[in-house]
Length: 140
Image 1 (spheres, one colour):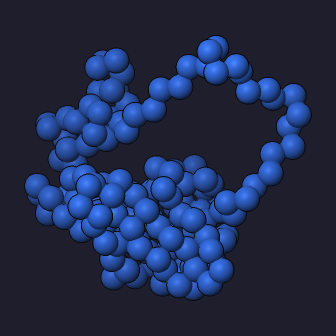
Image 2: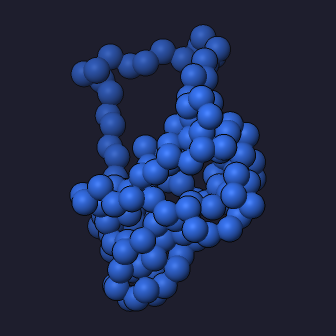
C-alpha cells in the first residue's frame, strides 16, 4: 500500500472502495491528471508510474462513485510529508531506524487497532460521504 519505489519508477496502491476512478498526480507528471490507477475489483486501485522517484510529491484524485465529485486526497499510507496536510512524499522503503531506546512490546502485551476512518464511520450527511475522526470517535 502507498508508494513503493523500484528501479525506474514507483508502484502506487490505495484502497478506495467508493471510487469510480482513481488517478495519481505529482512532480513526476507536472501535477496533471491522467495517470489512472486500475481497479483490482476489491476496493484496491494500483498502477506503476515510470519516472516517479523518491523525494517527489503526489496526491490521489478520487472520483466519488455516488456524486461524481473529483476529490483530492493525500495517501493514507504515505511514509512521509514535506508539510503538514500533504501532499504525500515518495519515501525510500528501506529506512533504517536508529533509536535504540525503543523496544517492541511482547505480542501478548501489545494492542494494535487499525481502521480506515473514511469507511468505518461513513457520514452520509457530508458531501464527500467519508467518515471523519469525530464520527469515528462517537462510533468507538
